[in-house]
Amino acid sequence: MNVLYKIFHIIPITYTLIFATATSILTIFTTYNNYLHMLLLCYVCTLMYAFYKNHIQLLFIIAYCMLFSFIVTIRINQKFFDYNTHQELLNKTTTISGIIKEISHNTLTKKQTTLLVQLNNIKNHKQNILSNKYIYVFCPTSNTQEIQEDQKITLYNITLRQPPAYSNYQLYLLKENVWATTHCKQNAIYIETSNTVSFKQSIKNIISSSLETLSSNLFAPLFFGKKEKSIEGITIQHQSVYWGIAHHMARSGAHLAILFSLVMLLLHYTQMWYVTRYVICMLLLLGYASISQSSISFIRALIMILLHIICKVSLQMPSSLHILTLTTLVTIIYNPMQIFFLDFQLSFGITYIIIWLFTLKQSQTIAFQKGYLARS
Image (cartoon, rainbow, N blue to C red; front, top):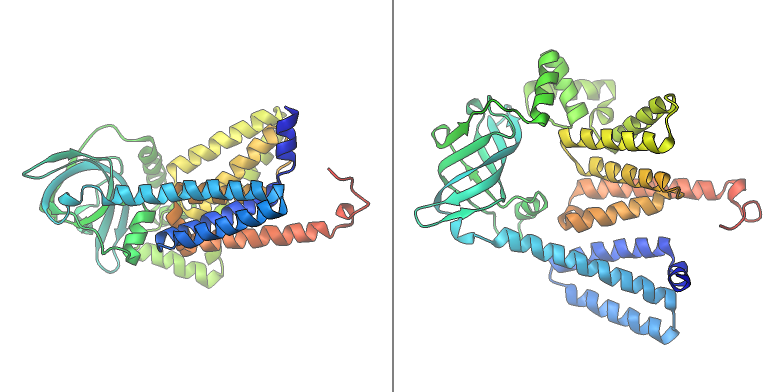
């Protein structure tokens, strides 16, 4: 036990997390652009320097960085492997069946609806393959007004396609974990109607039926994070810009942080045990996340709040910088392709700047200066 304590005691957690995150991001860039050998050369040179100087802390940091680089490399190769399987079914007439996971209507320009479908099977005249891949289905809006999420759908005589290799759209599909896309007409769609409705869809139906159309169009993007390209949606956006509250109408991690604070404030007056309050709040946040549409800022805030709750329940002092860095590591390990997109870069970059400025300001406070606070 003393040996483990000495080992972990000499590891600088802050530097380890920051360097592990930075090298993981660098690994994604070098792997995607086929420059991984240059990163390996940097690792070898740094290891030689650490052995030459007998720098134990640097050796531990390099070991952790290499571990996370290895994990990220495996995740990237796994994504490309899943994306490149069943290539023989592309650009051929097929019949597919699956479950509708998301619906996005566009009534402004193309009058088109986009369906995110999780496949059950793909078949043509030669083979029938079971699959759980995701595809985008583009179909006319007028034919899909009654379609709901979690319904079973079958598409007949369609052609699945993938964009050119290393194109921007392929990178987007890899990020969204989408295998292929297809366009279809009304006579190619069959929806299996069912009396059972999923919990997520039933909540949305109750809210939409209890609100007026204008209120529902305002409530859906603010609470569920789902924006429709329609006249009503554009009208609300223009009014938000006019009143200077457009940034408040875009659901972000700040909305989840405000919701967490309000729930904790209300539970504070119930005189519950603090662990019970945190557990109730965590369950409410997970339930809210399950019925709303996720975004990178929303996921970042959710993971950070959950890590904060874990620290509080386990009686550990939470560090915002450590929590944000761990959140970044979890996010890029789960989906490495996120780092190529502006929403990830802005969400995490601005949050890092805010936390860094807050930490810098806090360190200048007299209570945190040397001589006023004992070293922990």
